[in-house]
Length: 143
Image 1 (cartoon, rainbow, N blue to C red):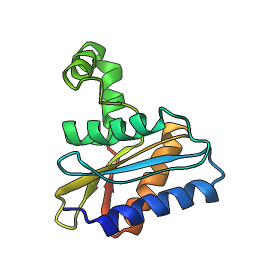
Image 2: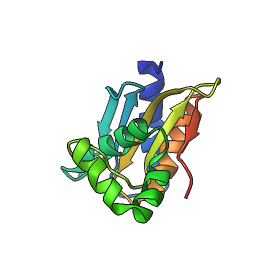
Image 3: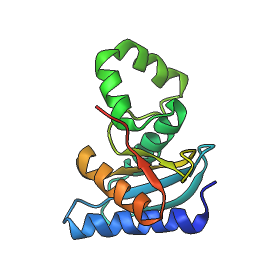
């Protein structure tokens, strides 16, 4: 289980990492293991679709059980399958890096963080920073 305090810390540290790195305005969503929103912040001037993208990155990682970096790699290799996944998920799944699974000390998935606003690699970097600062393990997936 991810607590509100942990989710809030993830969001705040991720946004600070974005400011410290001079990134474009970010939107950060943290979901619990069941895909429910626990914490969310959208920086001023962040685009209106950014929440849907951030949520979709986190939700897709939870839905498939691996980080969205792996989703992106697999989508490139099997686009028809991912078209079907998009349909099955009602368009909620985003398969770009920036959706990072959150694991506890035992390695169990307790949630996911999705970020949108800058490049996918930079979004992912901020998610990892937030998750690790909250004392949890970040699992972005692999290429």
